[in-house]
Structure formats: C-alpha cells, structure tokens
Figure 1 (cartoon, one colour):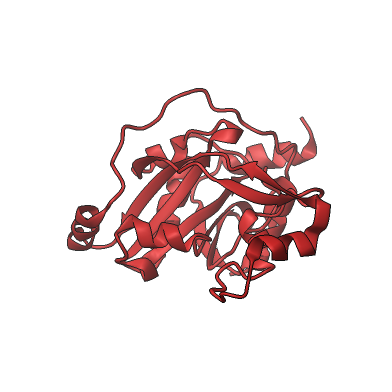
Figure 2: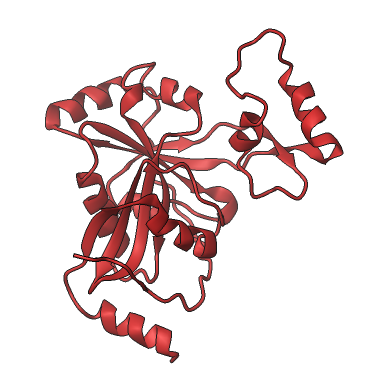
Length: 243
C-alpha cells in the first residue's frame, strides 16, 4: 500500500467527521483534478468534509443553469429557493459517508431551499446516493440537442450559448448565426444525455408540504441498475482546515 493510501485508510478509521462551509477556491482543485467531468460548476455554497484538519470531500450547490427548469418545477413558484447540488466528491466513500455528508451540507443551507440534482445516464449513474438521502425521484430529463464545439467538449452547452447571449431577447439576434460566426466549422449539435432527476425540499414541515403539493413533476419509483464507478487514483487528503 502506498504512503498516500495508508494515510487515507488510517484517518478513515477515526471518528468525528466535520462538515464546514468553505470558499469555493478550497474545493476547485479536487473537482478539476479528480471529478469525472473535470470542470468547476457555478458555485454559490461550498462545503468540505474534514477529519483531523484533512479535506476528504467536497460538495457544492449553485444556481441551476436552466431558467426553464426553475420555472417548471412548481409552475413558476419558489424560483428563488431552487439550488442545484452540482458536485459531490469523496476521496474514499466508506459506508453511508456520502449520504451523511449531503445531509450535513443541506442542514447548513438557507431555509426553505429546494435542491435539485441529476444522475448522468451517460456515465451509467442511477443516483443511489440521492436515494439513500431520501430525495424525491421525478424521472428522466427531457430529450434535447445542444450545441458543442470541437476541441471544447469540456464546456457545458450553457457556457457555449452564454458566449453569444443565451437569454438575450433582442429580435435582431440570431443565436445560431452568432454561434456559427464565433466558432465556425467547429460548431456542431449533439444529443444531450438524459439524466435521472432528483429533488429534496429543505424547510419546516409546512414548507415541505406546500412545495410537495405544488410539485408539477411526477413522483416515480427509484431507478435501479448497475452503476459504473470511475477511478480517481491515489488521491491524498488535503490538509487545509485551520480552527
């Protein structure tokens, strides 16, 4: 066993994890180097999972990139409460650690909040972490085709469209022509992978009841199947919490 993994194993045998809100800069390196998407999302709230001052995981929440999604969940209601759990990374996932981490993070979010998160079918994920955390499953996202750019496939489709004014309502703006002018022959369209969509409501019993009543998406049975995990290699915990 390498020295790195020996340290990880030794620390994971100890108790008393601590979940702390941290600056987004604290967790960006973990995502860029180790998360399978290799990019940093929009971050409004970031949390670190610590033990003995070592960073063992990161979880972040941000504004969903789709205004249509925010407007559609509750028919226009509660839009300012909606956050997306957009990244979760653990150096080593021992039993129940992910669900423990998510629960501790959500307790520190403003109340009421509506958390939405997705499990990527193209990565063979089913969202078992969200199922263990008692999220509501609302089925698969709709079918879409998105713009992509050759050589820039790491960019989210929203980032590409933002570059020419995704929400610009000007009648003089032809977004397709603007994208073609900007990216030329490198621009192409691709089918967006469908994702399992999960929702969790944080708040009082009445707040949860009211929002569940207004939820437009159907509540479905949890999907099952074989997950495909990705390797992160021998990732060392990062020492960085100063108390």
